[in-house]
Image 1 (cartoon, rainbow, N blue to C red):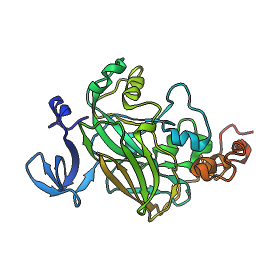
Image 2 (image 1 turned 135 degrees about the vertical axis):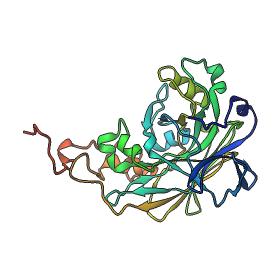
Image 3 (image 1 turned 60 degrees about the vertical axis):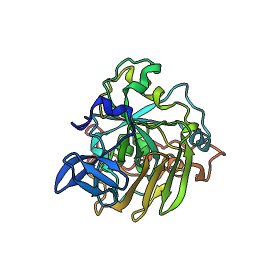
Image 4 (image 1 turned 90 degrees about the vertical axis):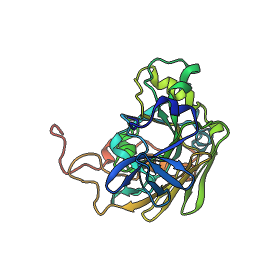
Length: 311
C-alpha cells in the first residue's frame, strides 16, 4: 500500500516520493534537489541513499507488446487489445540493487519501461476517469530469464518472476505528463534502447482501465506499460540504467549467482530457437526468414525427479 504519510491531496502537485533504508529502518522521503528529506526531517544525499522500492504493491501487472518499435522488430502484428502477464511481488527490486542471474542461465534480458502506480481503489472505471486513479509514475526494468521460455512462454512466471527481476524506482513522481517523453536503456553507458512514450499502442489510461474491468486495483499496485525495441541479454558485471524523461534514472547491477537453478525438479534452462529468437530480438539469425521452429517436447531436458506416471 502507499506509505502512511501520503494522502490524496499530494496526487495533484509535482512531488517525487522515495523509500530508503536509513539506520536499518525503512523511511518515506521526498526529493528536494540532490537531497532526500525523510518523514522525520532528516536529510540524506540521494546519490548515496540505500533505496527501497518506492511502493509496496499487492500485485505487479505487465503489458506484453505495446511499443510499435518492438512490434516491428519481431515482425508481428498487434492484437486488438493488450495481453498481460504478472510478476510476483517477491521479484521487486530497487534502484541500486543487484539483479541475479543463475549460474546455469544465459539469456537474462533487460526491458526498460514506465511503471504506473495506482493511487485509489479502481474497479470498473471509465477511460475518461482513469487519471483520477493514478498516483504517479516511476521507472521499471522488466528483466526476464528467457532460458525458461519453452515452458513458461504463456504465463511468463519463471521467465519474468524470479527474485530480483523487477527493479522499480528510484521514486514515484505524482504529476507527470506521459505524453512525448523519451526513454532509454543504457548498458555500461552505451544506449541500447531508445524510444518514446508516443510509440505506445495503448496509453497509460487505457492500460489502467483495461485491468480494472476484472481486477480490483489497490493503492500502490504497479502496472508495467511495455518496452521499446532492442531488449538484449546482459552479463554479470554489466550496469544497466533506464532513463525516462521527467522520471529520472533507475540503475541496477547484474551479478552471477554462485548457484545454478536446481535440476532436481522443474523445467530446466534451454537454448532452443524459441529462447534465442526472443532473447536476441532483431539479431536472431533467421528473423525475417521464418518463425522459430517449435520445441519438441521430447527434446526438453528432464529434471532428476521424473513425472510419477511417465510411461
